[in-house]
Amino acid sequence: MIEKYIQGYYIPNISRLAEVVIKVLGVSAEVDIRPLRMKTSDAIGSAEKYTNDWGYTVFIDTGILKADELTDPVISLVIHEIWHVKQMEDGRLMNNDVYTVAVWEGVHYTMTMPHDQRPWEIEAEEMAEACFQKVKDHCLNLNILS
Image (cartoon, rainbow, N blue to C red; front, side):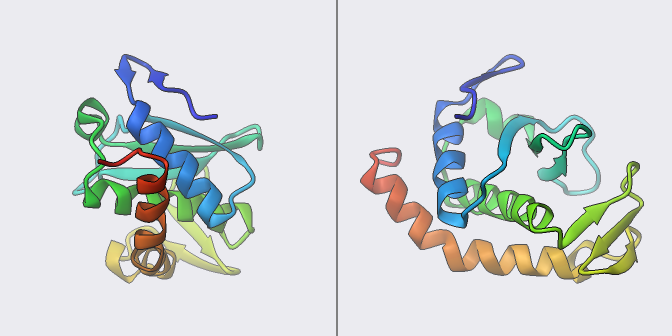
């Protein structure tokens, strides 16, 4: 279960949304939600593997965490970032320790590549779009959305 209280934030809605997304996407690993501390360019979220191989962390912009509102863009963001967890869990996406190189399906990419041209980002965007309505319907059925 994802924590509803994290480092000064109360996020019952986002934590419940994340649990739905994890279930819909078939992620089996432990996933934590944490505030995004190092904002780069237009980033509002990111995902990374724990150093102890125990699970994954999804980092989300502090403004989104403070609001804890499940708008359509927030739902898409959570799907997108948890899809990156799925990519890493399946061994298709790996990053070096300082996030300067990514290995996607065995091919090394420098992180200087534009964000919208990275194949793992393209796939995450496609999955966010493809899974959006299913996730939203699950949330409606669980009374997470009004």
